[in-house]
Amino acid sequence: MGSGGTGLVVRDHAGERPDGWTAPGQRLVRSAATERVPSLAELGRVHIIGIAGAGMSGLAALLLARGVRVSGCEARDSDTLRALHALGAHVSVGHAAGHLDDVDTVVYSTAIPMSHLELRTAADRGLPTFRRAAALSAAVADRPNIAVSGTHGKTTTTSLITVAAQACGLDPSFAIGGNLYESGRNAHFGSGEYAFVEADESDGSFLLLHPRIAVVTNVEADHLENYGDLDAIFWAFERFVDRIEQDGLLVACADDPGARRVAEYAREHGVRVRTYGTAEDADVRVENVVEHPGSVEATVSGSFGRHDVVLGALIGRHMALNGAAALTVAAELEMDLDVVAAAWARFNGVRRRFEFRGEAAGVRVHDDYAHHPTEIAATLRAARAAVGCGRLVAVFQPGTYSRTQTFATQFAEAMALADVAVVMDVYPAREEPIPGVNGALIASQIPLPEAQVVYEPRWAATAGRLADLVRPGDLVVTMGIGDVHLICAELMAELAVREDESAR
Image (cartoon, rainbow, N blue to C red; front, top):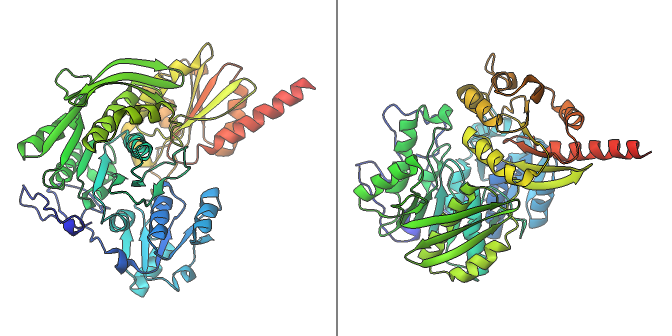
């Protein structure tokens, strides 16, 4: 998104071009950072490969709301595909060259391999192709952006800011990596002034934004298949800071060493900074955190006063920090913080963020998007408050071979926070297998008694294996970026059948 949408100047501190960079030693091999951002009118008729994905479906909804003709394809049918059809998209199940016969532009995500049939067809026909980030930037170019980035917590923080603005009657545009329970949507083009965007750092996509307010929740090593090392990740976050509008604001977590480092860089380069956290030197202090089985509460204080905040349907101390980040943004945008606090107390959560999927035979089942060791550890610690007298049964589907190889030991240590750890095989996403890298690499290192660790390489056998393991009072949480969430319904169906057979 060019700065022309707002008319404000973007910083160019380090001599880099403001429209993209190449870092010495950096491995952003699939980076969107240097991609050109088209105008909305330039897109014409858009075809989206993988249109039902969490990010792509939101983009499709935004483009449709802006009057763009949209088509798309997906490997399998789903409720999301049917919802997009109802909005006016022409959707297809399966992939075919013919899908591009009446198309001006093709949009794809980093998860789509360059060998994909439709991408190859687009190249052969000379059709313009853009990553999701470029098309999203085009869709919200005429709205001041509030961009939320960080290794963890982006979706929840963006959701809380969005719900706050909606409660205050601002009708914002938004693009989030998960569906809000209140509306069932992950994107919306509103009549209000602002656009709230979950800014993806994984492939440098956040470097296509020019935020008025940027939030950095934390910075850790992740997506090393793209970046190579942590230094390159920090380099990218510094470039993100450089793209904050003149007189804009960086909101960063004082409790996280990585976010603190980014905040120090911002101050050194004249960017206004506001930090939040439990740290004594935080500008916005988080105190009196209390975890409940179905919520978390805390006192948040800053220049905007002191507010007791209850976050409904969110659990864990880390969620209190996400709430503080969102409250800091809400205060900056001059929202009524009493109205905001009341809305958050009624908050029903976000899909795949410790989402309650149901109960069968006395076993409660939740699902979470956690896919990094830090996220898994945070989810399992938070789940302890909801377990009660039963056991915590963690089911993890590792996502991508490269992440599994890099973090196998850390994944194992995090899974040991459960009473029973079940590890599935790797969800490959876009990657080819790496010899010797599978779920067993994690399971073999989990420091729990052998009877409490299960490696199940067969997806279809997982629900039955779980049904054999669990007992009334247990809490099961499935975790991962892939299709592990589908296990929830299968498990509950299996438990219900067994309960019914037992009753007979």
